[in-house]
Length: 101
Length: 175
Image 1 (cartoon, rainbow over the protein chains, first blue to last red):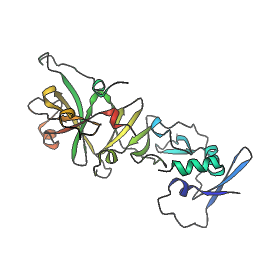
Image 2 (image 1 turned 90 degrees about the vertical axis):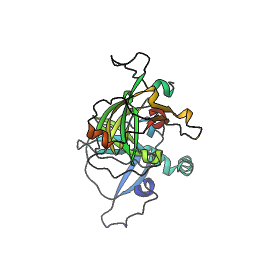
Image 3 (image 1 turned 90 degrees about the horizontal axis):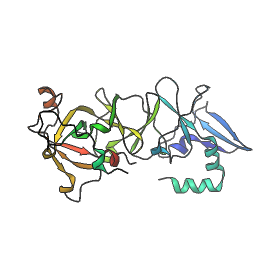
C-alpha cells in the first residue's frame, strides 16, 4: 500500500512533527487504486454538504471544497480522486513538480 | 469588463451640494498604521473575524476561508499585496466583504474607521502620481474642509484625516 503523509504534501515548508505512537492511516479507495494517508488524529464521522471554494482557489489541487460543521469553523474536504491521481500517476507527478510554486 | 472608474459607483448628490460637484463615498480602514479606503458601493458587509481555515497550496496572498452567512468566502491577506506589516488579529480587526471581480471575497483589516464623502477636488488620481503607482491604487483622498458623514470629533482624531490611499477593489482582489 503506497503511503502519503498529508502534512508533508500540504505543508511542505513547515517542520514535521515526530511520528507519535498513535498515528492513523486512512485508506482511500478510488476504482481499483488504493492510497494510505497518514494523519495525526481522527476526529469523527459525519454526513456533510460540500461547498465549493471560490474562483480564487480554483487552482488548488487536492481540495474538493469545504464544509461548515456548525461551529463556524470551516473544514476542508479532500478530493480523494485528485489525490490518488497526483500521487499514483506519472501525469500527477508532473503536475506536482510543475505546480508547486 | 468594467473599468476601475466604472466600479466606483455611488455619485449621490446631497441636496445642498452644487450640482457639478461629484461626491463619492469611501469606507476608510486601517492596515499597518496606514489609512486606506474602498468605494463604499463595493463593500457588502463588515464582519468580525471568525475562525479562519488555512487552505494549503493556496497563493500567498490568500489568508484562508471563512463562513459568512453560510457562504464559503475567501479572505485576502492585504499585508502581502500591499507589503505592509499589520497588527495581530484583535478585537478591532474586521473582515470587509467586498464585491470584486465576479467573486465576493473577504479582506482582513486592522480596524474600520468611517465613511468619507470625497469631492472630486479632494481626490488626487494615481495617474497624476506617476507611472510608479501600483495598479490597485486609484488615488489619494484628502478629506479636508468637506464635512464627513458620521464623524464625531473623537473619530476624526483617531483617523489619519489628512490622507487616504484609495483602492480599486477589482485590482485589489486579483489573486
